[in-house]
Amino acid sequence: MQSTLENIVIVGGGTAGWLTAGILAASFKRNNQTKLPTITLVESPNIPIAGVGEGTWPSMRRTLKHLGIRESDFITQCDATFKQGAKFSGWVTGSPEDSYYHPLVLPHRYDLENLATHFVNSAPEQDFASLLCAQGAICDLNLSPKNMSHKDYQGHLNYAYHLDATKFSQFLQSHCSKELGVQHVVANVQLVESAPDGDIAALLIDDGKRISGDLFIDCSGFKGLLINEHFNVPYKSCKDILFSDRAAAIHLPYPQNDTIAPYTISTATDAGWIWDIGLPSRRGTGHVYSSEFMSDDEAVNVLSHYANQTISADDVRLFNIEPGYRERFWHKNCVAIGLSAGFLEPLEASSLVLVEMSAHFIAEQFPNHKNIVPIVANRFNNTFSYRWSQIIDFLKLHYVLSERTSPFWQRHRDKSTWTDSLKEQLELWKYNVPWHGDFDHAREVFPSASYQYVLYGMRPRYTRPSANQPHGALEQIKRAEANVKQQISQFSQQLYDQRTLLHHLVNAH
Ligand SMILES: Cc1cc2nc3c(=O)[nH]c(=O)nc-3n(C[C@H](O)[C@H](O)[C@H](O)COP(=O)(O)OP(=O)(O)OC[C@H]3O[C@@H](n4cnc5c(N)ncnc54)[C@H](O)[C@@H]3O)c2cc1C
Image 1 (cartoon, rainbow, N blue to C red):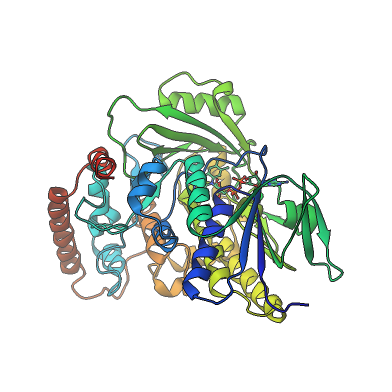
Image 2 (tube, helix red, strand yellow; image 1 turned 90 degrees about the horizontal axis):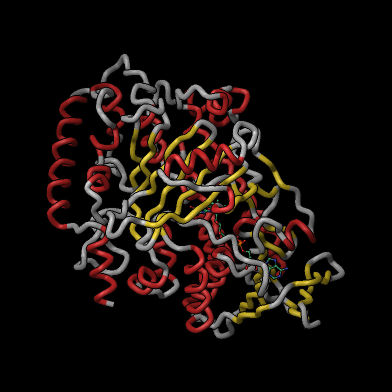
């Protein structure tokens, strides 16, 4: 029996399947091994992909570059736009002026010092993000993070993308098949054949063919064909922490040549929130909510009101969400990635970044001998259980800091729905500002800066001024503010608005 993993089989041709195939194939190619493992991706001809998931995280730039994709190809073929963070409207009180940014650029001098300490001691009446970061002002001006002189994946400001999820899967499929040697099989997996040791030996597909493999990656979506239906690995629901279990999604047309917001707009509602993502041709919008606090009809009405147009239940795509994740993602010779591994809710676009991280982890720690599969599997499970639990805390933070009064928000503030780890952080942050040491695992999904933006965006006075005031806090803050203002003025002269940049990129293509 061979001792190396030579054949990798991926089930599912959604974003998770193709991103995983591409990341693995590109990594193997780069390693210059004499014999590359084969990668086969099987996808059903009649089970559609989720086709949602339009907001990404800046890690996507590294991933696309790793796959050998030109940024302009990706932008033009996936209807992508530049995303510089999220604007949260109505999350604190719901009043018309209630909004804050979670930008993607770190607070001023973040690598060197924690200016949040000075902020809480000297300037909590000001807006944290606009005081210490230029990106919110650039977003308000609807400017892009880069201009035509920037190379692929570079810009003045950190950025991610908004994209058309269906086009993205098709684009990845073409690239992975043509450029990276991924074998593509269009067929339904009908049966899973087990080996004597309980591993998966092969998949039996429609035409009776058998696809054998050494490692099977389950990217089959919510159903979890291998991890759930075959292996019955339990699902850890967190519906008692994050209550949203329904989503109503719709594409809305843009008025001709309207500006495209270079950020995700997240607007709180009485029982959830609405996402609004600008692409060149349309706005991807949807309402994610808790069915316990709002019916589907009410949720569609709220969306209708938000969009300022009549939307009926027939116009939207409804999704059931069971917020949670698998107890184990890697079981025997099967790894779950994407929706089969779990899903929380679209807030902060944490799903695709986990797909990228999972595939990069497998590529970097790929077991060179079957004997070490259990060790790598165990590490994978520990790392990703930690990441999922951290994301749950980060998402919950957005809800517990709110002062909104409807029952959904009140329930979120009920401490019995908080995790112990979040309780501890929130107690700590009453006196200490969030900093690197609070999140010291390698490659955290959300850095401490993200916690600062949300914490002080929602509650500028959350951390009490220190009895032992740091020296020169006000001067430091004023210096930072002046630097940020200078950056805003410099960037605003050099950057185009989204549509103009996209227009240039398409024409130069
Ligand atoms: C409402 C909503 C909004 C979201 N927004 C975001 C966001 O903004 N940002 C973000 O990062 N993520 C978001 N997500 C998550 C994102 O949609 C997913 O992470 C992403 O689409 C990956 O899905 P997937 O590939 O795991 O599954 P799917 O897209 O469901 O693909 C499953 C694949 O498995 C195949 N398959 C199934 N059964 C079989 C079988 N028997 N044989 C062969 N093939 C089979 C199907 O044909 C399909 O190709 C959102 C999700 C929802 C529900």
